[in-house]
Image (cartoon, rainbow, N blue to C red; front, side):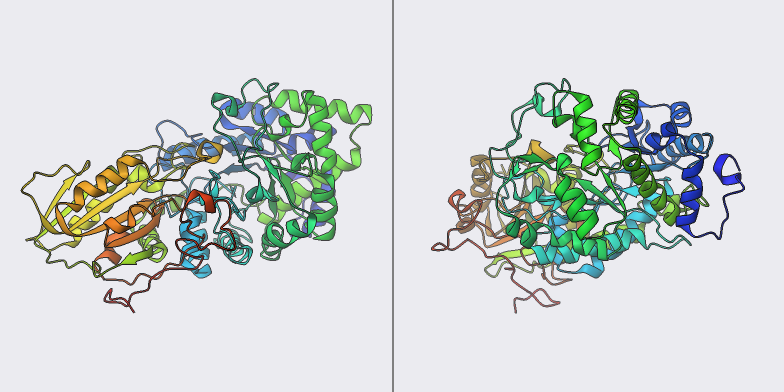
Length: 607
């Protein structure tokens, strides 16, 4: 044992508050500020973690070791934790990552449906179970902090993060978000909290207005400047405080009641003020009125957007109530700037003490001082068959049947089956963004089962399955049934902000080509949100919204062939046209209302 762990003031059976007070009494200003600092793993060495007493290291989307395996992840994170324990006081590190639909940065991990699909299940018990499984796979790689769940309430499906929300209605989001938090934080292994959950993004990120995203020319490496696609992500939320409290705040009340101990602040603005500068909402409302005693973490480089002057950014954010700053790169600049701010009296020592106390209290509650590492004996469970079966179940439960005119269920004994669409045989398109890489990508990005593989495994031996990605089958080839699988390209955050959600003409042409070869046509759509499908519906006999199902595509074929019923319900209103986005006019009717979904029995028959 080293540092604080061996100090006389450290008593295992002392209440956490007393332990933290004793520890703070030994800490220098530099060590307290070190705890408030979070650094991206490629920007800091383990030796620097020890030297600066850094509180947290993260892997952002795509922040993976080489080779990317569970075992190399475990070795990487262990090195950082070992370094933290070599610091003067031996304060353990919180290693964080965005495991937003499973441990999704790790090749071979179980990839669950994104939250939009989980919202369609209407099953908080399932979501809680997914949280527990995700926690196990995180702990196997020594990751104790998950930047999830997102408890945004998306009001405009053009937003590139809409699929990170469980749905458009506050009650559903609050219920599912609380379940995810319970699953992550109560996953056992003798710890009071297995993995620290992080509700995000406080508050109102789902209510921003199209065209309100800002540009910050003083940020030299701002990812937004790679393109102008950011239109609504990180934008301005309109509406008064009554609306804010009615729609966007309740999921955070539910999260606090479920025991969440960290909350990430939103890039977005309200009332012309960035949330990272919003003392009223961060300190007065969240910490004061709502009684949140955990700590607040900034989003990636978000404080830099507050002002061209970095000193002003740091002072403003910390005084507003931020406790830990996701720097994420130049941690030396952040530490020296905050130190200077304290020395000049622009940030009080009391505010620094409060931030450090909150962080250390959560680490104590988690048992990190006694158990700073995860559990490598769990590595065989990463991507295990049992976990994949749970993901397959989640896929089945998430599917929403929008149309069925006698086409489903399919018979295993169908003599001939035509399958088309590149997405039918592509794990990357099934998973979407936040999968191995930040933006995701097509192709065999991680082990999994494609929809096509699931179909081939399901049908009778004598059934001939013909697959043609572009639907250009020989003129003479016909079948009783054809399946077209369509997909949005993978995207994440503002890169997915999309002004027009209409299906591309190439998708309509694909449907029409396959329609000419089959008696009945089934269309399956992988998407992070409803798309405008009005023109294609007349060409198909069945239509399935499959959302972004993740690595276990055979869950779709389970339901397609009637082994399990369709039971999913729309988490978003499905618009008839772009004129109904962001909201359907009262005098109009959507293509399908919120909560719609055809139901079938165990044999797949409509009921």
